[in-house]
Image (cartoon, rainbow, N blue to C red; front, side, top):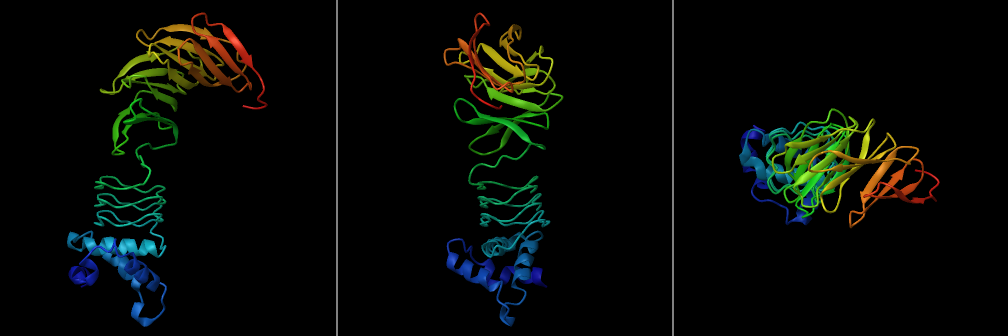
Length: 309
């Protein structure tokens, strides 16, 4: 009966997003013990459930979700597959473990919502608002992120062994780059944005074509985890740091090792080029920073002062 008549309820006639006074008034009634408002919370949940089978109650369902959220009602661990709640306001909502598979979530606002283990598989998310973009796709911890030089894309590396490219404007995944056989610790764009370099626990460095997603080069030489990688500003070389205690310089075009820089007594956690590509700086678990000459491979400076990593 409820599902059949839900679309006739007043709550289904107009979105209340611009009537926050009304939203808050109804939200406050959820905690009113008078007979008039008995079971209000459960009825609001039923409006949301009803939208699974009847998109004509989408306005009521969206209003119900907005009201429940305004009342700080937890909506965690709900099976909301296929619900239809466009334009709902779920800012700061508690939605941990809730599934929205196949749901219509167009224009829904999830700003600062708790979305741990929330499932949006095959949901319609046109113009959805996460505030700061929320990029979902990796199946394990993300270890490295970076913008492309023009700011239009993001690259990420993860414990799930993949490198992923994302569109900044839409928050959508563009490509997943697969090839590493273990955790990807570092990933970054070339200066012209056409390539990506990645370093992994599988001891390899890989260069990828951004447009096609294809692997261009496989660089082997490190005997342990590659922790840090970076292109030179002129794009011709790559520097890598590893838990094998070495820094290596590679030629991008050929994939050949140019030279190995040795001096650190423990893992090399960070490496980077100077703006003119003539020097490399490295930081290590041995508490030191070292500056190297790219042409000769010689150490120029040893900087000591840190008392820990």
